[in-house]
Picture 1: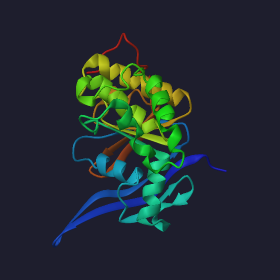
Picture 2: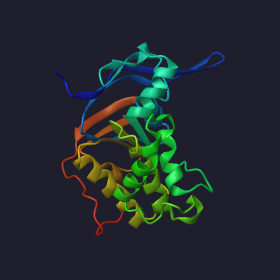
Picture 3: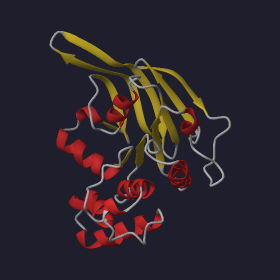
Picture 4: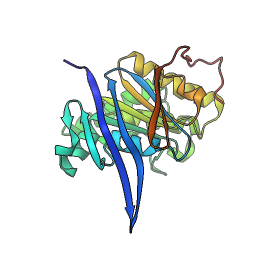
Length: 240
């Protein structure tokens, strides 16, 4: 039985505005196995963000088949998709998307709103914050911490529901070099523990921290290759 967590077959995504039809994704097909670390790379306007939105169940494809953990997402209602997204997917964005003037631990607890085990919310949030080195920042407001710490809070929030996959969209884009290395190390460590990571970036240097790079250009996959000399994040390197 296939261990593919994600399988796309002939995915097309179009947007219509009046009589204008724009095809953003064109016959996209690939699989991602459980436990892989994959970079989706491409320049601005290549379609990589739209692809991430479809992979992350934020948008539906116009046509084609998408299987997530064996489930055909076209068969699911919007409510079913929302519950699946909340349980199985964690997101880390370039802009952090944290609530301002809200404590670090309360930000991390947000995905647990639908949890039936609310008594464990504080325990789970504190545990994942410790795993990203922020157990000393639980009660700080998000406007009191650095950019690198904000991104680690975002990673903790993405992890708190123990999702099947983490999507990281340009996670080092707003960070200094040292903070960027720390974030990439956390992602690589999570992958080493068996977590599936999908990184979206326009930078080759960042993409090479993954095991595999899928390159997208003008809505098409132009290459899909294993990384031959994978970069390992450590304090001796600088992200550019």
